[in-house]
Length: 376
Ligand SMILES: Cc1ncc(C[n+]2csc(CCOP(=O)(O)OP(=O)(O)O)c2C)c(N)n1
Image (cartoon, rainbow, N blue to C red; front, top):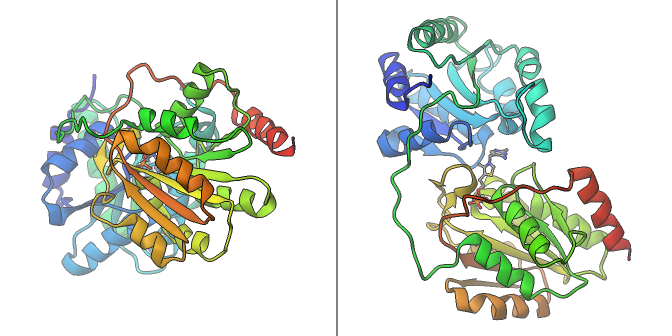
């Protein structure tokens, strides 16, 4: 039995919870999609990161006196800890917020390595933050009593409370989609073209989500081995800084960061730091589908901003945007020749294979393979 998104949305509205801010999550996919399709634009913000979402809900409360709902994957709890403890906490500005947290890595539920520890420590983290929490039950009657309890605690303490959302809590709801864009490459096609244009000594740092899974499968398919790739399976938004650290530590290697628009936006300050050093060997590719495709395709502002322009203003030496499949190989070849830090934005379509696998090397094996490759 699963909870209907429409029903839960209505239960929140009945309790005057009608403002949403957050970063999408796979376990909350259906509910995030429902909110994206139904909330008025001034009542829903897909935030840059989870901490920013808490701050948005704080501002909404200051303006209206109402509490907001902040949704996130538990991976994002780390991003939110600072505003949870130093902004909305009852001992600071004391702002009511309802956190809706997707519980990846719940003990006893099989999940990817990057979610296991976070899943195990999520309840203890909330306890340490002194945030009262409940598991969101999928059954109609139970959900009402849990919500009443959580909302009344939120109002009594005038602080954050959390609902933990287990796998398969919500029934399916599909995001209304703008439809396919056949002239654009899908991410996997773009990755294939990128990999095809790299040299055998080049190293790649790829971003969180399906990009890394697809890169792994491409290397598998082409029998190239995985040593050249550091798959940043967790730590969304930080892969460009991993790449920069490698470029600083090993000037002999060209280091290619393959990023996503959601990830770039999540920690956009990284662009300022990337551009601040004349690292000739540092190349940044942003695969921009204007969406958090890996967790359900909810929109980002990726197609409303000028990522190459921002990078240029941050000091990148060369920046460029391409939008057709045919240009990818030549554009990557040019990127690899010119001195970095340089950025290539590739506009891509939204979508992925249904049968996409997951890396079969563990993060630890990936690190060891990668360090050996670099050392060679
Ligand atoms: C801190 C954090 N918040 C949220 C997530 C869940 N998450 C995984 S991939 C992803 C979407 C990434 O979007 P983008 O970088 O645009 O890449 P795309 O999925 O579109 O390829 C999200 C939100 C996460 N892993 N970590």
